[in-house]
View 1 (cartoon, rainbow, N blue to C red):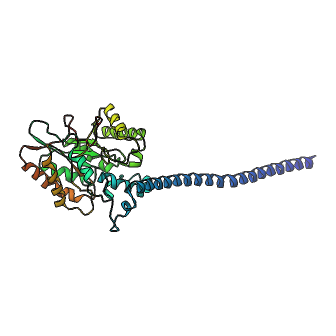
View 2: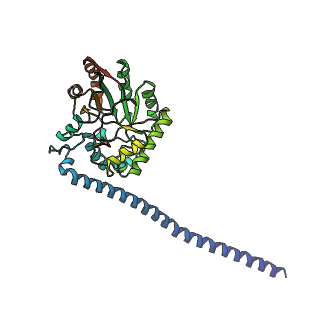
Length: 350
């Protein structure tokens, strides 16, 4: 009887071990099938996303070539470039299509577009827009008002710019983008604390996203407006379109975007004095000359400058610009306020 009991226990243990081994084998087979399947699925998703991004970039590049010609992409090859309606807009479109994929994977680095490429001088049509822009007329009190404005900041140059403005006791307007990097938190705050006007220039400054639709524009706008409020306590109601209101890149009508800004009680500002500081190779003296050639033409002069890490010439030119403007009779340098007569390339009335 004892032997039969031991045989029974041995048989039971053997059956238990067999069942365990069978389960282990089945689990191993399932894992061997499941792991490669999951890896393939993940790789397929990443491949599809990458392919879509590349197709989007190719589509935008093809659209740009169709609109402006192949020579617009011949930068640095000594070929002629077509003149287009907005120097800021042209440079950004080319840079965006070339760098959008890498920018998406480098979120820690502030998005920079205008800073990275050169641009042409405005052509005759654009100059006519600037000369006849709404807001170019006198505010009827005989005082010339000059607005020094900076796009694209903050940057590594912003504190230098603020130091110069402080030295001359001059207030300016900064149309900034959204840069969540902690390096810029104090810079946003200093702009406000020093008494300058904080305006909006889109959060991302990516034309293909910003101007894709009214919804994408709204999302970008409120993201920046909220970001600036949380950072500085200022609820900004001043806006400058990347590329200006006369840009030809937007896939949605600019009148629709302008109407939306009005509904949100936001005023947009273009410029009628272009410094040309977004061109490669421009010097301090050229920037000063461009500005001072434009300012005397208007009783309401809105100067376009750029606040960017590669714009040392702009920083160097700023003191002389201030001094030359202050030499003009009946002229004051002021920041944009809610009472400012806006310079606008287009408006709802047109």
